[in-house]
Length: 233
Image 1 (cartoon, rainbow, N blue to C red):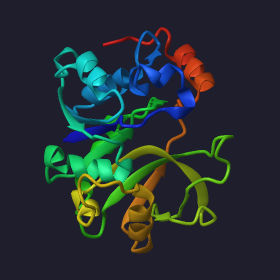
Image 2 (image 1 turned 45 degrees about the vertical axis):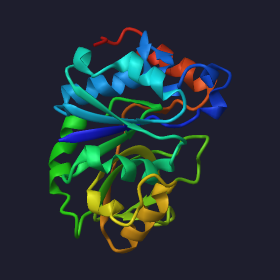
Image 3 (image 1 turned 120 degrees about the vertical axis):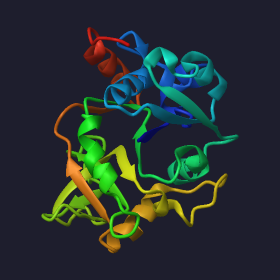
Image 4 (image 1 turned 180 degrees about the horizontal axis):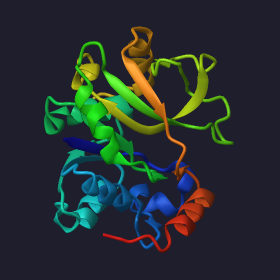
């Protein structure tokens, strides 16, 4: 099974730190933030990982190399300018293949058990079931939430339905979800998900463990404090 780490963002809210260092390479607990994802994915058996990048992408490739130090194979999807989430995934599909894959935002710190997601990932059939999202309790900076988790495990595009939660940036997708999304063109993920949700094709689950959106300098310091002492690859 393959995974993709989204790492193409500019990190505007993290400037000036990101003026010369791409956000995924900012140090957290003694190693680049993105390395924690690679390490956890490797432990969960995701040996082939695709990383997309745009801003200072060559620094990401130089720092991470071919992935051998982490026991994985890294491939890079290069974007001249950031293509948004759906556009980035659609562009990377030739590297991801025809089977369902896992995607995680490169700028979060989490203890999600990626191995536990493998059965759900394998069950995505590309017809009745196109995606499965992990959601978290609404953080203070996003109190309204994104989607509603219904009693049957499906997701509603309306956060007022069921239990309103925030998308964690961790999702399982079948390539069919992106069948109509052109490569090399910017495209947002939310409209695709909302359309599929209206058809009952998206499920979800709540993650109550560690999840931190490392989107500000303050939250970077918080992530660094949390990860200090964690074993590194």
